[in-house]
Figure 1: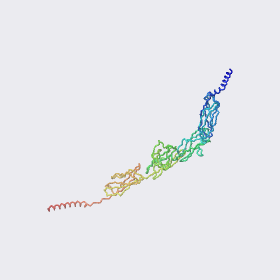
Figure 2: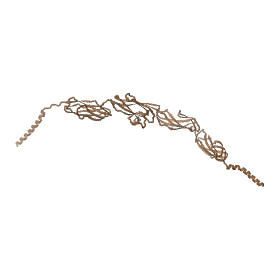
Figure 3: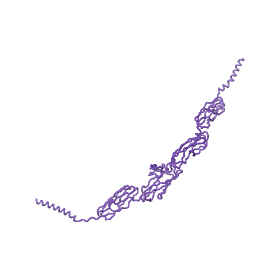
Figure 4: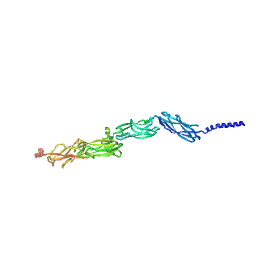
Length: 496
């Protein structure tokens, strides 16, 4: 009986000793680790924040939870109840320059979670700010601001102060403070530049770093080429007392913001005295197209002036000069306009020729003489002394005398041409010393002109008196010869 009691007691003691161990094994606590957020880029000296979520997916409380890293940082979490979770941020400061890989694990009394690895890059502090060029014009006109669209960004995880943009030692823009990872767009305005090619090396910096430089190249076009004056047309040769007419075409570059355009005539006789156009001269589609002869102003080189496009969009301005002065002269004009802060003023001139009319001459070729009652030929010479072609040249008799032709048509004549014109008429009703008048009618351009009359004196000689004997002797001789022949034939017949 005693042996049986001892056996039961032994069984009870062993059960009491083994019961806690069996409960611990049968009911384990399980933790899961999830990384929620961490930076992929940091700079030397920063603390690297990594936020994780620790979840207890078991049925018993996890005691003494500690978040640990392979870089020897840790964060005490405490107890996590069943089905509970907790977000925890651990800051890493033990890292190396370049790419780092760190393992994270949650330890507790009964075990640990699965390991989670994170990778991040560590750069030097002077690379903690960036400057990007978003947009910038390749060319601007002198007098207008150059505006570049930039973006500056603080890549650090902390706010920095004193951010700015500079070129060399010149500060171009004060940005101020930038929060962690903040990017700010900036319209950088440049007013200090030179005509021609400009180069800017822009640098952004703040108290903890400097961005790599950004290079910008742009062209500044001279303001005096933004608006151009072209010669539309001008009377090539004007004759007194004609009105001299000319037109000037004003055109501006489409991308130039032109204002206050005005063209003034500097000669008193030119009418009107000028035109105010404002800004309505840009070469846009709705502007009329004009054919032009030459470029008067706005050229930046001799080659450009030679290669002027003959079809121009712009405004055509008409001028005229009544009673112009004789000879070669220049009509002066002044073109002014505003381009941004630049006021442009240019003077130019248009050359004109005013000739005294008429300049086609009618010349008598030779003395006109004949025997009274005979026909005569009047020979004239027509000389074109003008420097231009003349058209529809005619020599017209002015007297009421019948002659052939009734007018002599020549047609076109080039400069220095010298052509004859002849007329035939009878002198039956004329006296010695009578006069004939002729003139030239011709056309230059659209103008019909005529010369003053040329007066020609006719010299007539009386016919010689005739001798009656001259009219009687020939027929008598003929009669005598016929009679002699008849007698000789008759005598021969008698002899036979």
